[in-house]
Image (cartoon, rainbow, N blue to C red; front, side, top):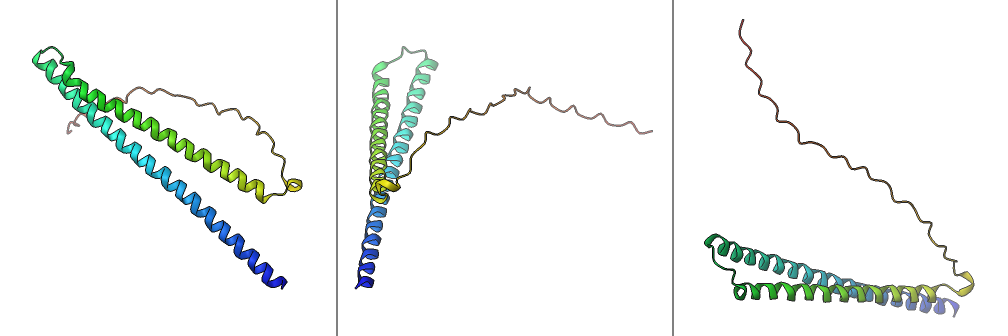
Length: 150
């Protein structure tokens, strides 16, 4: 009977592990999807800024007064995309926070209180100093003068 109990115990643990992996995979897929949406919104911003720049330059070249009514729709598209990006980043942060909470709960459930390790605060490490070296532009090589034949 002990053998059957251990098999059932192993089966339960394997099922729990598979379910936990499926949850994590689902969260990671949602985060990846949100990141893809952010990239798409950033692309929309770049396109709107390009169109806005073209309109502005066209008016500049012709010497016309700047027509804000013509610029406004492009500015609104940029604002909408930036708001969407902010919302998506908040959503990603929420997903990551949920994932951390779930991992913490799993860790607490797995480790009995008497065996729980005491967490020590990490020692603060000094950031390595970075030396910035500014170089002058390399000089163009001087063309070699043809050698006179002797």
